[in-house]
Length: 306
Image 1 (cartoon, one colour):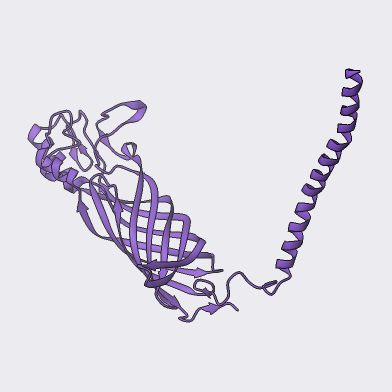
Image 2 (cartoon, helix red, strand yellow):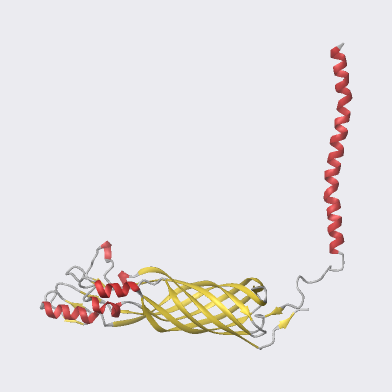
């Protein structure tokens, strides 16, 4: 009897549970439908078809951007270059521009490491090629003399920047990439071998010691210029004070290989030192710099959206 009663209650309970589950499913299925209807009402409301931003100034599109710049290289081992230059670019759209940038190293500033080598460096027979005299070390280090690049600029973000909640300026954040030509000035190639030659580029150990040492010291002042191709990329922030004047803060990277100290670093087949300072001693460096720019737009009046 107890078994029959239990079965009968279970059979009664099953339809009720099925009804509850069915109602829950119907409620779940109906929810997206009501949400979609609410969204449809919003799209069809008074803002339907309106742009996300009205009366937006298109600072870049269809305008020339002229920007005098002044910057400084960072994280250099032996010298930092202060570079004065300019950028000229044209806005294909408000978010994409093409342009050229160039700068010249007006001042080379020795780092603390260069000063320390000049004050405490020790010359031995093993390193005489790399450091003929500590007093002349600052004359042999490499310099970045000039840079020019062709680049594309992309603007992913723009808005307003607030200063102390009092001053508001239009702002955009941009990134750029391109190819650069870099002018480098370095100590000229020099070789120390077993010959008796004392000529440009060779200071032989077979010559009298005084003549050989004099030859090596003079090599610290011998300079050579070359040009290298490097990728360039970076990012910046533009701040616009009116329709055609603004300020830009920019970081730029330019990786390429050079011998910043112009010392004997390596040779063929891993031979070190190999008794020669030349292209084999170049080491890849991640060169980078930061700069400030004064933005000038032409024509002076930007296009303004509806």
